[in-house]
Structures are given as C-alpha cells and as structure tokens.
Image 1 (spheres, helix red, strand yellow):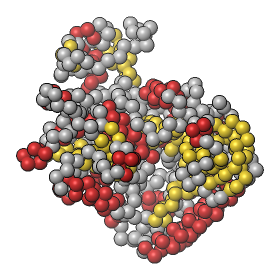
Image 2 (image 1 turned 60 degrees about the vertical axis):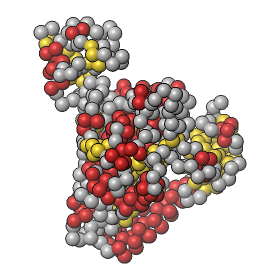
Image 3 (image 1 turned 90 degrees about the vertical axis):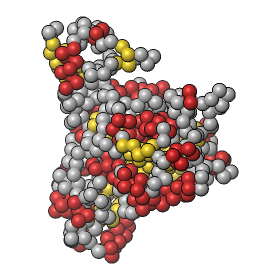
Image 4 (image 1 turned 180 degrees about the vertical axis):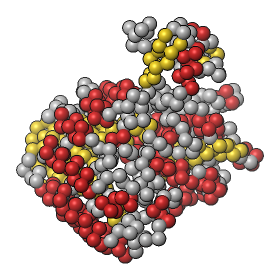
Length: 559
C-alpha cells in the first residue's frame, strides 16, 4: 500500500551482487528495505519467474505484491568463448572501440573511429524478420551503419555480415554454408570482416557450425537477437562466440530498425512448447515466454507516435500467450487491449494454433474495431489420423469448428493456412481428405510444402517415408486447388470499394502504389507513393487475379 499511489516503485533487485548505477558505481540496496525488505527480495529472487509475472511475498512488514518487469541475464557469461589464435587476433583491429563506446578508450590520441558498415540477410518467417529488425537496432546503437545500396553496387563490402537463418525448409543447413562461403573467402583473403550466423540454424548447429566454417565469429540463437551488442564485445576481444544456451529474453532498450514506415511487427510471445513430430522450432526457438502486457502496449503506443498505422502481433503459437505467466493471461484480452491504443488503425496477428485457438479470439476480432478480418490458422492435414501422427493435438473436426465460428461471426473474413503433403505414412486416401477439407473451407491462400525430414525431429527417423514422386504429385495437385480457391475468393471483390492501406511503390510499375485490404489482399492502383504512403484510401476494384487485386482510388479515407 505504501507505493500504491505512485503506481508501484520500479528498479532492479539483486542479492548476491551489488546494484550498479548508470554512473558505474556500486549502490547499496539498503534504501529498498522500507519498500521491499531483504527477506522479501530473497523470496522473489528464489522463485522461477518471468517478465510479466505478478507474485505475492511476505516479510516482517506484511505482504508485498511484486510485478516482474524484466529479468537481467548475463549473456556473456552464458556464451561459450573460443579464443582466436594470435595471428587472427592481430587482424581484428577494426571492430573494437565502436561497441557502445565501451572500448573507445583503446584508441590512441588523434585516432578516429572506423566507419563500420553492416548487412543483414534474413531467411524464413516473420519472426526472423522481426528478429533482424531488433538486431539492426542494436547494431546502429553501436554506431555501425547499414551498407548503402549504391555503395554495394559500387563494389563495397560490409564490415559485419549477419545471416539470420531459418531451419524449416529442406537443405536449410547447406543453404547457410553456401551463404557463408563468399564472406569466408573474403576473410581468408585477409579482409577484416566479422561474420555472424544467427537464427534457427545457428541454434541447431551450435559449435558444429564453427568446426565446419571456422571463419565465423559469432553463432547466436534467436533468443539473443536483442543482445548482439554484448556478444560482439566478446568477439572484439579476440574470441569466437557461441550463444545457444536457453535464456530469458530481456526487453530491448534499443529500438528495432523497421523495414517499413507503415506497418510493424511486435513480438508478444517467443518460443513454442508444442512437440509436433515434424517441427524443429521448439528446439531452435526454445520454450514459450510471453511478454508483459505493459511492454507490448508501450511499444505499440511508440509505433503509433512514430506514424505507424498497422501492427502485427507475432508469436510462433500466439494463442498460447499468457499461459506461462503468473497469473495466466488470455490472448483475446491482449487483442482487445492493444486494439484500443489511440491512433492505431489496423491490428493483425499470426500464427494461430487450432489446438489452442479459443472462440473468444474470434469474438475479440469481431468486436475490436481496429482488428482486421483476417485469420492465419495452419491445418497441416485434413486427415485426423495424419494429424495424430504429427502430434498436432487437434482433429479435422476441431479445425472445422473454428472455421464455422469465423464464418458465423465474420462472414467476409479471409482465412489462410499452412499444409504439409507427403508426411510419413500419408496414404492417397488421407491426402484426398486434405483436398476435401480445402474444398469445404475454400481458403484465401495456403502455404504449401512437401514434407522434408528435419534434424532432431521424431518423424525424420520413421521408416514409412513417402516417395519423392508421391510428394511432388500431391504438391502439384494441392497447389492447383489452392490457386483455384485463391482466384475464387478474390473474384468476389470485383466492383467493391475497399479500404486500402498504402505501403509501398509497385516495383514493377513505378507509377502505381501497393497496399492491402483488411483481408490481407494485395491491391495495386495508380498513385504517387510519396503522397500516399501510410494513407488509407478507398479503391474500387476492377481487376481480380489469383493473388492480387487492382483498381482505382475513389477517395482518401484520411488525410
């Protein structure tokens, strides 16, 4: 009650080590005794808590309600270091001194800091794209700038290259080593280049990646995306670094370098606790960790203040949001809360899991003005038997119940999905069940893939693998049906006037702009991108193709 009027006191709490002030000096923690006595602090720190948790502890002063805002992790302590040889260390002179100013005293009088550049190459899903934005924010906070397009066209190379990798598709590891090749060649030729491999393949391969590609300086899992600056300090001190240990993901004190000025990604939950037999994601992205509601809302408010119109909430299994928190939270409540942020025009979210997607989420979309009528709900197979073998935790019938609820509450909503064909043991009859589910739902689009064994997954070792011939045959047939339904769904937009958020120029027709409807459909129309970027406009659709629409602007919705 003593701090209730102020909304609660906030600050870092430690027991075994002194608290370090921003000045770098050690500060006594005795001043906390009047608010949160030492015995209460010890009780909080002894608990297994995560950011967002609210716990009650007791002391001689009574009971204390404590919200965990963040958990500080010493990532440099968790990382494995491999000292470079003296020969390699002698060459590593460019990077020190630029990292957050921490090493700037190593420069001699009159010596200028190097103008360092970086390039981030991103593979895979939206989660990786969001991680890359966070890493770029960290790099720029260290004074390292992105290599310009004109510089690259002129033959310049980045001083630091980050490969943010994806392990979902077949031959993912080989593709990564192929990407590393040209940069490793530069290093072998004597160029001073720092090579970072991040993301899911980095998490999967770990130290093995250094054995196969010894030119790499830093291997880091996705849980360290916002700590790349700390890890680069160890690189600059002459070490090869492997950071793949499980870790809480701290709130980022730097701002991501967004790839768009109109629409932004916002992570709400990291990791995945599912154990689908084909999927490597839980191995590479770790256990679920939900972000505090307050942190998410604050990030969205800052984005709106910067002029962003649309936000997409991200999670590998977004419907699991809050189930790891104390007390538990609901994703439907988060949707409503974020949707009420003043100035936000559009709210999206991905990816839903049929096992956890509650009907309350559909109701929240229907009842939240800013929420877009668009759902991405992977079904993976139309056969309940195959779904059981996949370990999906839901049936065909459960999936169709979700679709029925969407159609009843939001009849015009778009539904997209993911599907795998040729899963081990899948028969032609079971594949036909997948096609029949697609005919029943008529998806707006489906991401299709033929099954490919991924390392460290149960299904990879099964003996009942489908032949490549069957996989490719099924993939062709499902792609044909997918295109048919995509065309049919977009054809219903002919003659309609729809609201479009203008995002970018049409790269193929520079006099046109590209935007999206609330359904997520791409729309092209004539217009000046410099005038229209970030604007909501009404477009009358006069052309409907398989995966995009086009039309003419009839009026601006907003100035």
